[in-house]
Amino acid sequence: MLKRYADYFDSYEGVRVANICGSCGKKAIPLALLGAEVTVFDISEDNKRYALEVPNAANVHVGYEVCDILEINLEKYSGYFDVVFIEGGILHYFHDIDEFMKMMNSVLKTGGKIICSDFHPFTKISDSLNLQQPTMSYFSTDIFEGEMAHARFYDEETRKNIPKCSYRKYTISEILNSMIRNGFEIRQFDEHPSWEDERFPGEFTAIGIKNN
Image (cartoon, rainbow, N blue to C red; front, side):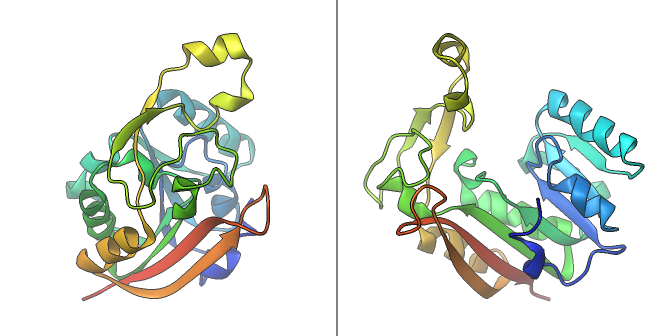
């Protein structure tokens, strides 16, 4: 589960990792098995149940905070983590990327690392990942309604009853400039091919270090 991201981690043992929108813990659990001290932040109580039962069966510990990501308890977590780990396509859930990146900076130690892996902004103009979401102008700043990421895997009757999400998709420059504005020095930027068609970009990973 971590193969794609392994090169972005300097080490695991004893490293404090904030797994942002970590869902059911599918990345947090292997991180914990490798020795990291992982805390998942996610808004879903149901995800928490799974994410705590599985590591318990595997004899490892994963912390889990059910909260709005923009309302993380900074009295507890300000400057706490060595690594902020983001993956799986979450930036589009946040309509103010500066507010989001400011929070990511706040929970990191000085010198800490952000690993931000997300859907490539190319998916704004082409459904290269087959997410079955609307396409638009690459430079669109519109907020739009769409299905949750996994709705396409359900039968049509169930799919119709799944609540919609409100999205805001960003360009590459919006993402990188927000990281810079909010105290990160960009150290690396990688683009990854689509799993549907390797001719097209599907995901990216941006690595930043929290400045003094």
